[in-house]
Image (cartoon, rainbow, N blue to C red; front, side):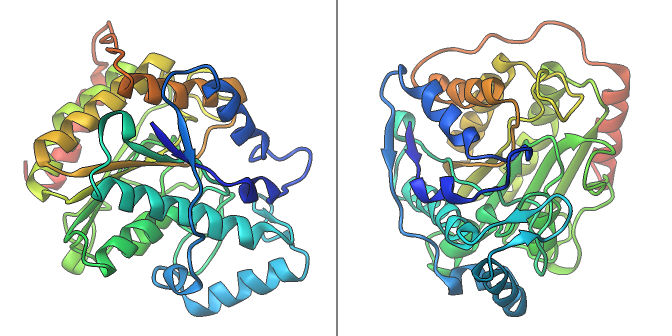
Length: 334
C-alpha cells in the first residue's frame, strides 16, 4: 500500500501519560518495515480554508490561537502543544491526499492509507474533543466534493468509538453517507440506531452500536447484511474508511473482541464493496492505543492488499446482534 506520512505529526506532544502519542505512528512504521511493497508519501498540509469548509471559522481561529499560545488542555482528554495546529493541518492534508489518490485510480497494492495524527472523527463542527481537533476524513470528503471529483462520498467508521464529529458535520447532507460500527455506551455516548440523518440527509447516517464483547463474526455480519446493501444503494464515488484499531481484543481502552484477522476480513469486505459500486477507496487512521495491536492491525490491512487471503471467522452470530441488525434495518424501512 501507499502510506501518507509526515514527520510533522510526531510533533503533536500530548504528554507522557496520554494514550494518543507519537509512538503510535512509530509503532506502525516499525510494524511495516519488513513488509513487502510499502511506500511512504508526504502531502501538502490542508489549507485553513479546507478546514473551515467543515468547521466553523470562529472555532478554527480559537484552535489556531490556542496552539500559538503554547496549547494545554482543551478539555481533560484533548491536549495541544504549540505544534499541534501544524500537525492537525498535516494530518488533514494526508487524508486529502488519500482521497485524491484513490480517485485518481490508485487501487490494489497502491491503495492509499493516511497515517496521520491527531485523529479526527470526534471533532465536531465547532469543538475539539476525544483527542481530535480537525476532522480529517470530513476535510477529505468535503475537498473532493468541492473539487467536483465525485458527487457522493461514503465514510465507514470502524473505530470502536462512534465518530460523532463526522456524523455532526454531515448529518443534514445528502451527498455524504456516514456509517459507524462501534461499542454501545462507550465514549462519546452517541450513535444510537435512530440517528439516521435529518433534512436532506435523512437516511444517510447508519449507526450500529454493538454490545461489548462483539468480535469478528458480529462485525462481518453487519458489513455483509447492512452496510453492503446500503452502500450499493447510495452508490458513492469515493469510500473512505475511518480506520481505528481500538476494537481489537487486546486494545487497552475497549471491551470488543475483534482479532487481527478481523481487520483483514473487514478490509477484504470494504474492498469488495468498493469494487461492486465502482467507488474509489482510501483509508484514514483514527484510533488504536495498544501499540502492538495498532501496528498489527494496520499491517493486516496492508497484507490483505498484498495478496493474503483472510480466514473467515468461526462461530455463530449471537442473538443480541441479530436483534440489533433487525432493529437497525427497521429504521430504514427494510
